[in-house]
Image (cartoon, rainbow, N blue to C red):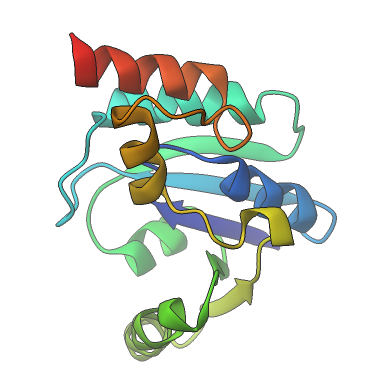
Length: 158
């Protein structure tokens, strides 16, 4: 079984890494799929987001980081995967994620969505929140890889 963990990963956080480390014991292969085009305005471009994600997961043997564009279920089929991994931090995530899972199931009934909750120390963080912390000069080392912090600071302050 191959699992796809999709997202914008703007930036890739230690919460994302926590989820991957926990599911790598379940799946023989995990594809971290970095969305190239998105409705969200991203701070980092897709190549920067790919570089950070690859750096963070480099020591994990069964994890591949790739970019994708278009419909997620099409990418999952192309990757010969059958599971979409999604993280749920709080009840506020549930409604949106539930709607996405239902749409994906309607588009591709052969693909299942699996939800995981993060470790407690990451349950309250989001990429948006961490962008604000870095933008305002706060300490984000506990939640972000040093490369992510550097790339964000370069974008924000140069």
